[in-house]
Length: 320
Length: 277
Image 1 (cartoon, rainbow over the protein chains, first blue to last red):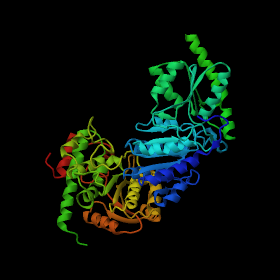
Image 2: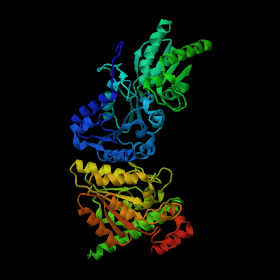
Image 3: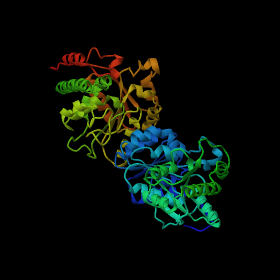
């Protein structure tokens, strides 16, 4: 965990560089893009390994199924584009040709969430985590900063079968250190506390840390969990957080329907129910504007988390 | 061209046996798609009993030729070919579509020995084949990739994405066969979404296009041989076929796209196919 002020970094630079590093050690790594190779920095991989990068044009269905064919032939295929095109545009291709056959196709998408900003609702992909995590065999990662995106690339190449990783166009605060662990099914406790647990992904991890600082000034000791592995969930860390604090707030740059908060609520409702609030994009489409201003407008803020924390705390006390 | 008549006769007989299996399998399952299986039987027989380089004892042999059935609903004839070729027991065929069977209603990857790709939702198989062909070229392997498409799959946008990519990547190790039986689920293809002039379209997309009678074994073999020697671009063989071919009351009859024969129809079909019931 880094102290504030955090510097901000491009997630895509880490992504592109990690692919090059991975490709150097692994001949079986291939990368596909859909007229998005410069934008996602997969062009760096193409410069290093021209025979292993395939730009298929604006044809995401084709991209994903070609990736499947490569994966059936001994390759580990990274299919990379913007999140709206790499998920909802091609959902049934992923379902039938990637998830059902359990193939090593790794779908890495930038431009997720509201922070795409000025491009507006058509490009602000807020439903991808829910879509992808409901597919059997699929793993879902949501890194919180560029370093974690890089680690996700290496992790994806290690784990079997399909995996989806979503990150952002916006520069995000650097919250983690290079030596910090990043593993499938592992959440990271970024700050300890026993009054309430703030469980967040992506950009909302930094906002959770800010919320925790503010809550501390009000005498509330908040635990902050970076829940980067949405599927599989880190049951142990999440259940421990629920037991230790008895009050949980989740926060994600994704619709409140079906995303990380839903996943956590599915776990807690069945294993250890505690008062809980889910913060995310309300059940509406986004709009153009500065990415972080749009986040604020739609309530994805530290203030919302503080309010939600107070609400679950009062519910906890009322129940007690 | 004068191909070996004994070979032609043998492959015709193989196709007849595949057709027998198709009607028996779909009858036993009380569901499935006999029409598009019967139209494809001759091409499948040519591929599995003469063209494809395979080892039934080692289904994942890295240098094997790949066959992707993109029109997944036609899987009964493919299962029949795999069984007759020795990938699994012929007795398994009548378990088609039944609970616990490895013969799913549409192909499942990793379950049925010899099945190279999942298929069901139309239009994904040619793209998958392109991935296989790219991998083969990348690895310097000389295997060939074959994909069979239904004509209805020309409605699917992804098919044309794949058509562009196959030519763009100059995949001469890829051969597609279009089972042009003229019928899709609801009606004639031309009455739903006109496909013609179909060979011109594929030619315009950069493919080497051959048009043949998909029930004439000599033409089938000649086209597949020509595809093997064509360089710098993939080949599309438009096989003009008859849906339900070989069973008179199924030929060109829409109902048998997705309806299995009943007991009486089975008996008549077997009799027409020269098989004791």
